[in-house]
Length: 305
Image (cartoon, rainbow, N blue to C red; front, side, top):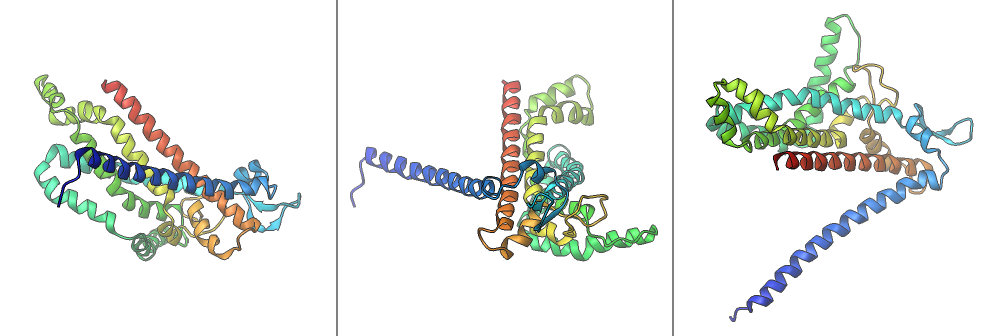
């Protein structure tokens, strides 16, 4: 069988890769345009005030307010989403950084061969399994701890959700943190040792500071993962659409309300349009997180340069 000329192979390769890029770009633009069109309909077609949507604290789309508009205050879900995301990141970050230091600086052989594959196994566990474990273990443990302290709670809420999400985002932050610390040039460590610094002084003052932009990227990616998680959070957050007053009272998030309501409302209704607006809000937050990652990467590259 005759081989194709080199220039033909080159053209075919460029055509195939170009088609792949065009397909991905078309898919992204289509998804963003679809969500934006449906989400904006709440304000452009249904006449709901944007300020009332973002700052309102009452969520009851089937009931009109004093102005005759559906009551669709999304602030309880927005607050719940940010609270769960920030608390889960606060739980996972010290463990992830400590694990990364162990793998890269303390016991590289053991860490690379045993610990890193073990932590990466957590990525393959389905969300529903995390939610089930959270429902049967974390919620029950939280309720029992509160009962031992003389408090009566259901166990559902932001605290339980944050624990479940912390375990879910731990592999992401840990793996990226390991890569960030491993990317620090060995000359930095050797220079620190030459100046008489101990290993921990070197890790704290040299390695972590040099890897700070990449570590921040790992944190933001973990937060993005936590912010968009739906099923596991829905199973343990309590799904009470109210302003969070405590870490231990039932709450709700943007994703939990979306998963509960989207399949129960007909297309074209005000409630359905409002749910699309929640989806648009989630998309915008994801884009903000991605923009922050690029800004951090750009500043880190500028400093290294």
